[in-house]
Structures are given as structure tokens and as C-alpha cells.
Image (cartoon, rainbow over all chains, first blue to last red):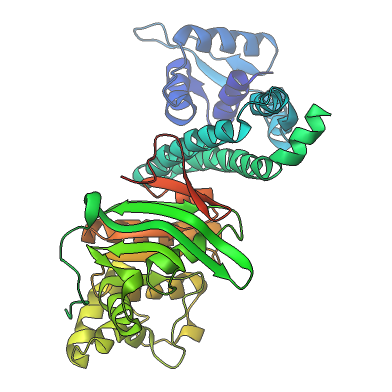
Length: 175
Length: 241
């Protein structure tokens, strides 16, 4: 299951909600500038109901289309629990664009070090922006910025190590 | 403030406050700097990055007048630092520069308050006035209540904040920080960096920050990389202004 339905399920485990409230909470915590369309919320809730992971309550009296409250089922809770407990697949770092660029640059006798420096500058600029976010924002923003910062830091360490090994790498790829 | 010898109060050449030109420095047969250039503008926060042994700390020590290069020039506020006598450089370090190192290097026999007051006392400021001036810094750096503790009674983060207060209490023009969070855990290190950047900006202090940690460097406005004793500017960052 992809991220959106699992996240909505998680929000429903917290408390039964209307579609509107789910969208509002999703956008606040996970949207980060990419709000979830209403259509996707209701389509997802429909699929979750069909699969027995949520049930929709009776239509409540009142105006507007959003008059059903959704409740997570035991099956839905189990799904959320399994998802949370399962580690995310580590990224296959050796297949990154950066790896391909460095290797190609060395193969083609182009200035790999300069490309790495340019990449380092872009990474550091992004880290500066995220550092500003974590300094200015609340704890949720800081947590998200930290995730980005640690990933960028890992890339930068890879860039540093690669830069230090360029001559031996060049020998290997040109052999 | 006792003025250091031969320096103007304004910025140096080419709009820089502090500048290294073609620095060469060796330790025995081992070259540490091989033609290093760096210009830092007044009020700027610059991170000097690079692998271990690349020469970044040597560059900082030459800029700060702790080491004298064998070749090249160091300029600060229009004065030639590398050509000064040791007593002049000592006065410069005491009056115009502040220092934070990896471990606080507090004087263990003194209380936290006396450690912070030390640069002022060494300048000849009366003890009562010096201690008065330190009080603001204890509040500013969230150290209130720790004034009477000795370094052994402080956590790593607290000791580093005391060291930061000591570095900034005299209102230095330049703060030199060499791996200031190197001995701290990640969260404590970030707290120290927050305070270092905020206090420096408040005072308009120029900061030269040596670090191998990109998360620390991200607090700076600009980064340069020292590699094999030379300074490389990253894309868009001129080494010289």
C-alpha cells in the first residue's frame, strides 16, 4: 500500500474522522506544500472501506457533502502496525545519478572534482535552507528538516570520500 | 578597549576585514598550507571545511595570529598581522579576537563566571565591572545559575557555552571557532551553534568557523574547502572578494 492510504489509516487510528478533517490533518502534518486533493481523500477512503480497513458511519444530518464519519477496523489497525514496524528499504546508493555522473566524468576524462564541488555547493545551500527552516519553525518542521539534513549530510560524506579517491577511481574505470 | 597596534578601525583592503594571501606554512618537512587565500568580509560567517590534515586549522591559526606563516601575508583591518611582533599579535588576539575550540579549554581553577570575565580582567578592566559584564552573557546563553561552578561541574554543552561567552564578552571583531561542537552530541551541538550564530549576528561579529561537519557549516553564510593546503571556493563563492 502506498503512503497516502497508510497515512490516512494512521490518522483514523488516532480518532474517527470525517473526510474533511482527515484532509486538513494530512495537509498540516504531511502535505508540506502539496495538499491532498479532496477527490483523492474520498477515493482512498472508498478503497479502504471496500477492503475492510475502515467502515463509514451513517450519513449524519446537516448540510454539505461531508457527512460520514470513518472508523478504522481491526484489520486497518493491523495494517498500520505492520507498516510502522517494517523498516524502509535502504536506498541503493550506488545507482544514484551522482555515482553515474562521477564514473562517466572519469571515463571521459572530464573534471569530476569540479562536478563534485558544484554538487557540494548545491547540497550545502540546501542544508542552509533546511537549517533556516528548523531554526524558524516549530518542532514538526524541525523534525522534517532534520530528515532532509541527515540525508544531505550522508550524500556529502559520500562526495568527500569520492573526491578523496578520485585518482584511484579514475584508474579503475579507465582500466 | 586597548587598541591593537597599527590597525584602523575600519575594514581592510578590498572590503575585507580579514584576509590571507598566498599563505605557506610547514611543520618540519610536512607542508600544511601551500598558497592559501581567503577573504572574509566584516560581519560575515564563513565555514572552512576540508578533510583531516588538509590545513584548515593551520589556516585559522595563521589568520588569528597564533601561527606566523613562512610565506604570504595576513591582513586584519588594514594591518599586516604576520609582520607584527609577538607582543602586538598577543594584544590583537586579546583585544580584537575571540576563540572557541573543540573542548572549552576553561581554566579549571576558576569558576564559570571568572572564566568568562578573564579576557576583560586581562585587559585591565576592574574585577567588579568585569563580573558585571559577564552577567548578561550568562542570561543570554542560558547559563544562569551556573556562575559559581567550576569546569568539572559543567556538562560538555554548558562548558562550551561558557567558552562561547568568554569568547564574545569583550565584543571581538572576529570570532575564530575551531570545531566548536566537535565534542558535543548532535542536539547539544546545534544548541551551541544556534547561540553562536545569534550572538555573533547581534554583535555584528565576523566568524571564521572551522568544521568538518556539514550540519555545522550549514549555519554559515558561505563555505570554502581547504584541500592539500589550498583554499577552493565552491561554486558561486569567490575565494577573494
